[in-house]
Length: 277
View (cartoon, rainbow, N blue to C red):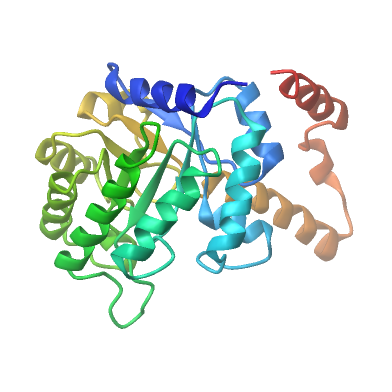
């Protein structure tokens, strides 16, 4: 198994090389092992996917439970793992910094902090506070004994504020505060993505697998995107197949879903191979 610092340096190198790479999002140990076996170069956790697996809504997992989950994921793979750290599990810059230090102790090599407050009446932090939070996360990351890759997220589009100008200004401010990677989930078009990439000097992450804009890895690389994540979409795809199968049984009393299910032997052989990596 690679050391944490080795994984961290590999993760840095992925962001420094030419082209773009995919960083898929497992939601449990099994999905992390399977994605590792399939040949991906790095993984990222998904707060939504993990919450769904626990019977909860996105954002309902507390920090202590999330840290335990990250420790399990990091131990399940030899790949660099970045973490969805939501809004840092608190409003204050101090809390965000503490979250970075706690997360680093789980074995991850990077993580994201978002500027969403979680408050329906005021869903995005003021720019001043958001920048202070990113700066605190950066300071905590730089205090570690390995190179932690910090991603700063601008959440406007996910909370119904399709304000590209403000989103870009926020990402530029987070870049100036020291973030290593910038990320605005929910961008609606190729043009929006290109505008974000063109306005920044550091690597940009985009999320695919959502409804809306559909671009290939090659197309995103041509725009200048460096990293492509898929958020909770793999977990939702699995749950979609589960729900369709359950509805078929309930509504029709039939079981044809089994024709599309992966075989027990195939999964067992894949997990056996994954456990040898």
